Image (cartoon, rainbow, N blue to C red; front, side, top):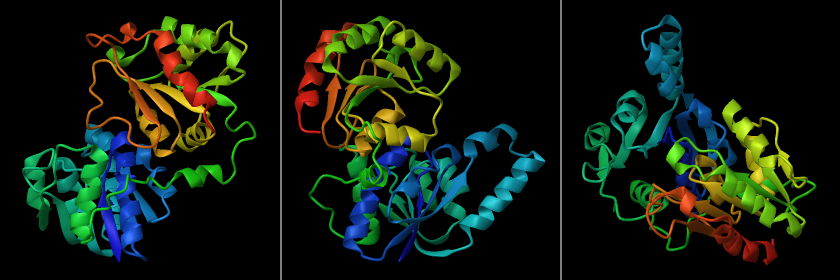
Length: 325
């Protein structure tokens, strides 16, 4: 059976789809998937053993010059790629009008998705041949697992979802595996940042653990922050600019991770690494870290990230460092 998945973004949403593929792979031996995903996240689906082909789409970039000649050519080639196969099923796990109209609509195969009461944008369901009611009061991973089970006709497993990508990165572990921590200090919204002084306090508290601390970054201002955090500490390493796959390899070898609310925190969860995520203004509720050894720290009152102290995080982190890696 050949199935096309439409789940284009964001990083967390793409990662949250992986356990549904694992369910299907185990329930229906021989099933294979193609996946339409935003070009910036195209590396992720290829890590899963049930994915044959990744089809990058660039809706975010195209909409800036939708009718430009180069974009028209890219859109034409994309349509050819999507329509090059007749699929047994097309599963739209995005639930948005733009993905349904621009991707799901043109794919060849019976189209499944959430019904108007379940989809994030109800009108997206107009483009589906089969519409499924999905319980909204459950984690995003579980919603997607339920959608796949109903679309493909197998019982939803009662076990916790399995991303099935950790082994991809641990086949050749780094030489210093389990000998370092990773601090994911970068996020998109100012209100979700933990103060730099708090990060430095935590680094200081962990100096006697014997573990190095690695700081990844993606933009120039994140690089500058990482350098400020590392200043004066011999146990901190500011990493070079890395691809998403390279960052995943670093995360996969970490003893533990401390992160703010960011897509890389979800990647850490998908890699089954112990992870403490600091949340302020966002509610982790139905979209927080899903997986083994995922922990949340929130302010005791209000939603100011500064109210989370370095000793609070240290208290939660130390038992993870003493546990078997």
